[in-house]
Each structure stands twice: as C-alpha cells, then as structure tokens.
Length: 262
Image (cartoon, rainbow, N blue to C red; front, side, top):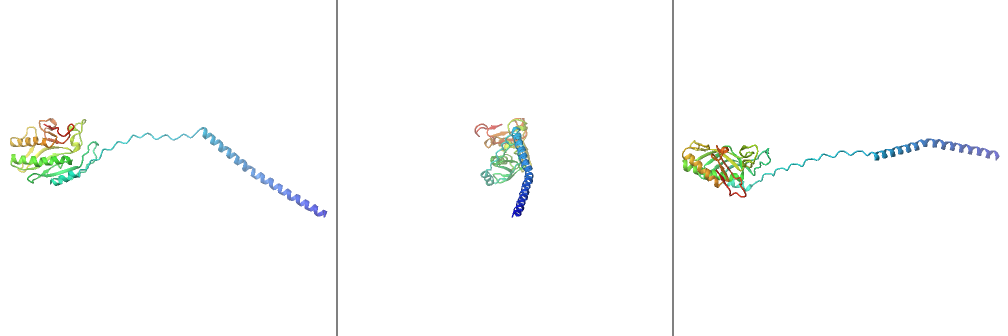
C-alpha cells in the first residue's frame, strides 16, 4: 500500500508539473499579441488626435457661374394669317430662318412670297422671293395686286409682270453700325427696286424718275401706299432711299394711326 501511494503521489506531481509548464508557455505566447493590440490602439488614438488638431482642408468651392443669358422668345405662328394668304391666291412658302447674330432679329410666322395675282388674275412674280412676316405679307400682296397692278394697267396700258423686291434682313436702320433695329430685321418691311411690265419695259426707282406717264404711275402707287403701310419712303426722302421704295408696318408712337409718308 505504501509503495502504491508513493507511486501515485509521484505521478500526480509529474502531471501537475507538466500542466504548469504548459500554462507558462501559453502565457508567454499570448502576451506579445496583447501588447501588439495595445500598441495599435495607442497609435490609432494618436492619429485621430492629430487629425482633430489639424483637420484636412476642404476643397475649394466652385467658382460662381454667370447666370445664363435669356433666350429670345420664339417667333409666334399665325395659322389664320397663312390661311388668308392661301385664300387670296398668293404663292408663298413657310420659311425657316437660321438663328441671326442679333437675337432681336425675330420674324413672326416667316413666309417666302413667290408670286401674287392681280385683280384681273394676272400672275405677278416677286423675283427675289423675299422672306417677310406673314402679317406684313398680307398688306404687301394686297397693295401690289389691288393698287399697283391696276394703276399701271390704267395709266400705262400694260400689265405688271414682276417686281424686284427685298424683305427680311437682320440689320440696323439704314445699314448703320449702331442705332435702332430696322423694320427689315423683324420681317415687316420691303424695299422695291423696280417693276417689270408685260410690254418689256422696266420701271426702276431712281431720283430723276421716269418721264411722263411712268413717273406719274409710280408717284400714284407711292402715295396710295400710305393707306396700306405706316411708312413709305423713296427718292427725295433722304439719301438712304434714293434708289428704292421702302414700305413697312412699323408702329410709330402708341398706335398705328401715325404715318411717315415722304
């Protein structure tokens, strides 16, 4: 019995010694990991403290952009006016204008007028096929067909065949570099250069005029134009209108009752 007890005690001592040595080794193995974690936490806290003292600068704000320029109002579309031109037997085509260098040059319901018919149903060609606003094409076409053609037929004994005429042009008055916008820039004006008759005669607008009945006929239609347009200018008005008749429907003052006929 004594011998067995001694053997058991020795065995127990050996087991305890082994366990203690194993725990000591394990403790030595895990101690550096705890130290490393502590060091990492300390470095992280130090970095956060430095960033708090020296915050990262914010990016520069975007430069203030200039407000966009307002776009010009789009031209209006007057279908009723187009229908009236069609009913009147006038040859025209709805025009599409390219954007002008000056945004103020806007033509409402632009049309390219090709030909009109006189009261006697004679076709009168507009050689240059001017582009004008529909609201101006109406009085222009009616004046040519109801006044100019009958007067020439009565006074000269021949029919009106063609008209050399220009319309829309984005520019200032009298082609000046500065100043007010011309009525041509709105498509509400036309410059008549000459009239062609069926007998082969061409009546040019010029300062000295044509002799006899031809000059009287041009003077008559020029005066009658004041009933259709707000402005009628030609030879004798000023130097800028010495070689053509200018007609427009530009409003002078607060109403359309005021006329400039020179």
